Image 1 (cartoon, rainbow, N blue to C red):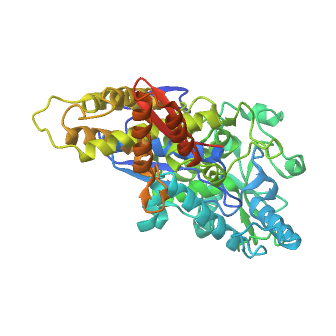
Image 2 (image 1 turned 60 degrees about the horizontal axis):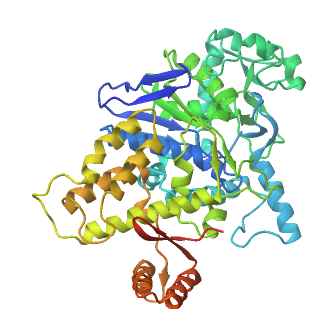
Image 3 (image 1 turned 180 degrees about the vertical axis):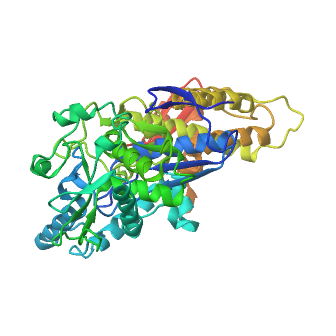
Length: 509
C-alpha cells in the first residue's frame, strides 16, 4: 500500500518513496521546541502529528530514523524576521525567571539558576521530555538509548561554523561591513520555492519581515543572517568572524546533515506552518548550497495552527494551556493526545473541553474492550472479527494523506460491532492484536492512566457501580439508581446511557 502525503514544496499530494526505495528506511527530521518555557498544546499538535506520521510509516513497514532538535541557542523572539530580530528567547527566559525570583513568584518546582541560560535550557528540556514521553512521542523514547536523536544546537556549534565556512568558500555567503555573515539569496535562484515568496517581494518588504536596521550592510534585503559577532550576547562562542552566536536557521541544517544526511538529502522534514518562512526556506537554501544536493528534504510536512474554543491562544484570554495545565484539569494523556491528533493536520484544529471529554469517553470505550479481549478465552477457529477486518481499512485511511479522522471512525465502528457485554466476536487473540496494531499509531490505550482509589482499581469499582445502578433501574428503584449515579459523580466521573450500554468518563473542567 503506497502512502500518499501532501508535500508542501510540491503543493500537491505525492506518493511517498524514500531515498532507499521500496519499504526502505526513512530519515525524518522534526523542528522541535525552543526550551525557554513549558511547551503549550499548540506546539504539541505539530509534534504529535509528526509522531503519527512516523508511526504510520512504521505500520506500513518502514524503519524510521527520527531526529527532533531541542533549541537552546539562536532562536529570537521575532520569528518572521530572517535575520533573527528581537531578543534571544533564552535571554527572555532568564529575565523572566530573575524577575520572578526577585518577586518570590517562582512556581514550585521551577527553581533554576536564572542567570545561567544553559541551566534554564536543561530545566525546560527535562520538562519537555517528561511531557513528550507522557504523550507518546516515540522520538523521546528513542532518546533514552540514542540521545543524539534529540540534539541540542549548543552541542553542534562547530558543525554550524564549518557549514558557514563552506558557504563563504562557495560564494553563497559573505561577511558584511558590520562583521555579520549573511547568506546571499541572489546566489540561489530557487530561494522562495517552498514558501512562494520571491526575492523581489522580499526586497519590497512583502512576504516576510525585514530588519531595516541591517539593510545598509546587506547586498539584498532578503539576505539572512548566518553568524553574528556579539561579545555582549549572553550565549556566545568563538568563531573566525568573532565571538558571537549562530542564526536560528543554521542549526537544523547542520544537525540534519550530521545525523541523517545521505549525500546531503533526507526523506522528510516536518514543523508547524509558521516554520515554512523564513525558517525552512532558509534551511533549504543553506543546505543545498553547502552540499550541492538536488534537495535538502524530499518531502515537507507542515501542521496548521491550533485554536482554543474558537479563538487564538492567549494568556490574556485565559485560553493558553500547557500539557500540564490540561492534565491538571482531569484529562488523561490519552484523551489529550487524541484531541490533538484527530483533526487533519492540514486544517486548523479547534481544541475544546467538550472535545477533550468526547475523546476521553472514546478512549475509555476502547480500553474496556481491550480488557475484555485480554480476559476472554482463545477461539482460534473463529471467523475474522470486526477489528481484524477493520485493520486494512484503518491502514488505508492513514495512507491517504494521514486521514486520522477516517481511521478513528473505522476503529470506533469495529469496536461498536462487539457486544457491550459478554463474549467478544471473533478470536480475542487476533482481535486484540489488530486493536494493538491500530493503537500503534494512535498510541492511546497505554496512556489512559487509571487512577487508584485506596486499594481498588477505579475502573473495577465504577463498572461494579454501573452494574448495581442498572439492576436498580431494572427494579425501578429510582432513588437507589440516583444515589449510585451521585456516588459515581463524586469520583469525578460522568456516566452516559446509550444504545451500547452505560459508559463512563472522567470529568474535564
